[in-house]
Length: 368
Image 1 (cartoon, helix red, strand yellow):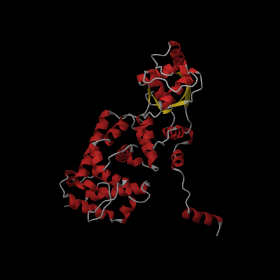
Image 2 (cartoon, helix red, strand yellow):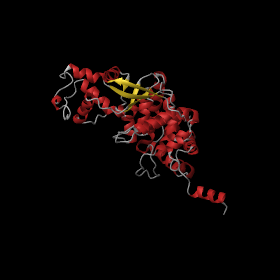
Image 3 (cartoon, one colour):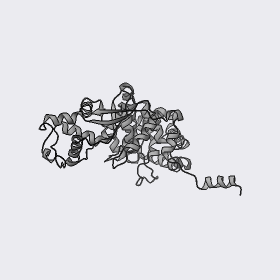
Image 4 (cartoon, helix red, strand yellow):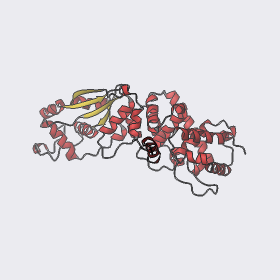
């Protein structure tokens, strides 16, 4: 067997799977892969002021404060003895605000102490200061702390969004690795992200998806996924994460009027699906209507987009027998082509198109 034929066979039998991050970055034009940054030494007083007036924000998923009082006190002591403080990283938004990428525990500790939030404890170099708060410190200590500087590196807004995502992942040092939606929440925060966050906490969404606890923004990502496929499906290319990144960046500044229309469309679609499919929504089951499987994200795409875009007045009216309708949907699960599109390689462009087109066609041609 020739070398080329052997390589071809090996590629078929043992395909080399690239990491998704590599695939995503390869989608960024080479000339846009450069990181644009700005470095500044900001005083503690300036950082405290930025946090107070909203110029500097700590994204919602970053706000969990986990440092002990001893850790926070040692930070203050480090400032007093002029011990170098690790660099903090920011991301510049389109409206010139700064989002904290790395350093939230340090910044929250400073904010808390300067707001008289705790008394110093566990100090080793200056134990004489244990038990003192910001307001009870000698003004000379307060001036010294306020004037200390911390090196701050800002990733500027002209940096390509996908490069920002990559750097955000590399720099975040939390014990729990941030997922893609949490990164979008920080980098592309705006009305769209705020809306999907709120909808993911709504009763209608929690009821139909069976969600009781969602601590990692999974629901928000699924709702964003609906908006992306509903309004930009013609631009879809895998990987799915990059598609959602680009969509959230493009629509970061969506108008309130447009967002209200999108939200109403989403809610109407969700209500209609709940009426006709009930507990079988977004789940695979058989004609006996026995216990359905768990939530299937690919089926969610097909059902949500299908119901939203169907031209069937009968389906839109909701005036069909739910049990009969549910059994006919079960028949569709028996179609090999449709079944494969919601079970195998579900992020492939062909699979996405197949499942949405087939379910929409099923609804368009539905008859009593």
